[in-house]
Image 1 (tube, rainbow, N blue to C red):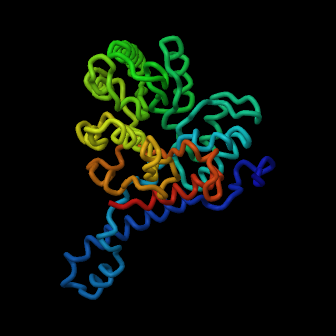
Image 2 (tube, helix red, strand yellow):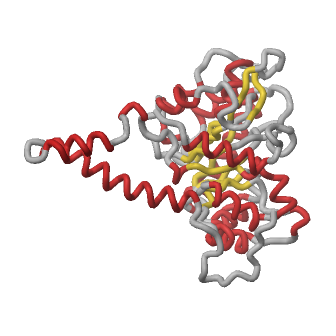
Image 3 (cartoon, rainbow, N blue to C red):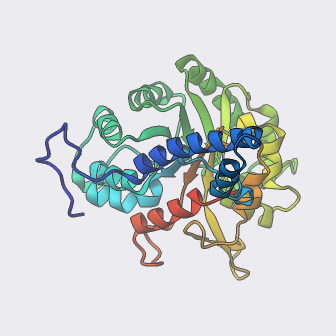
Length: 342
């Protein structure tokens, strides 16, 4: 990346207004117009021409509301892990902010060959770029939970999570007791999270929609029934939930969120393209290039804006797709998420 601003004066913005700043300015102005237009019809008799002109200027109602408000669009840094390793957090944050992202979910706190960096230094880079830390994927254990909550505090994140299954790694199916023991551990860690003012959360792959080997219970249902809903929360990966439905049918991913929307403070917005020759039924693609109907999915949620939508593309740094640059994938994906209307 060519735009290093090491010599820039700290009080002088050294790049043009970011898209997000621009969107905020536009949003503020359109709110004013919208309120004005809404008030017009009442005064129509006094000024019919003005009312007609306001109606003509108003956007068509069919366009619908944004399904993911722009101040809730984030990215899981695993998507651009190659860039974090080669360019470092500073350059990556500058580019993500330029694209328009406002929320960051971490996948580790190191930057490869770029050099050592502390959580305090990462927090400064977030602040410098107008970004917020929403959460992180860490393998949480009773041995590291206190330290990880401290790091979360430094970064200012309201959530702290885990990317992989809480029992048994990514191995094969497990008996019920293995999951129940892990659930008990998470409930204990969740109490520490609550005391620290941070929500712990689980992220799913396909495995958690499968069944216990001995009692044939759906693992996600064990989570649902036994995790403390006040202290341990969910980040549904919508793509992997669709793979789960393909592999272990008998449920609709959206139904879990609708049952108790508060339990899902974060969603992973990940797209998949149907592929009958893949065991998963889908291939991971950049957002908007797939077949998962996010308009239909998100339109069913009545509490839009209450959760964060984090873009993730597991293979953005490894699969050569148009043109195989993970930051370019993140740029196009941001546009397609921001364009979703219900």
